[in-house]
Image 1: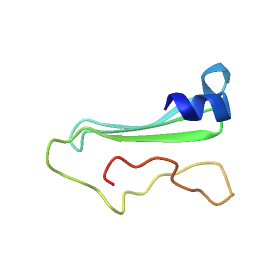
Image 2: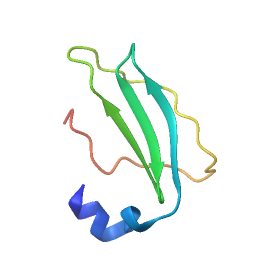
Image 3: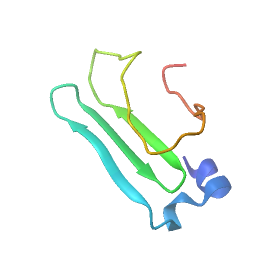
Image 4: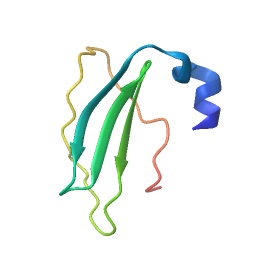
Length: 68
């Protein structure tokens, strides 16, 4: 995350938005700057097709995935 902060400077961005905070699934999704962060804190469940809504129309790409 520190590397991507150096590339995108998202910590200094005014844009912040929490789009999902789900206690049952233990998921948090938020936007900061030009990035979307998706965290799964569930101890055993992994979600492969979790739908996430954004206002962005551009294609998205994964910069870091801890499952790999």
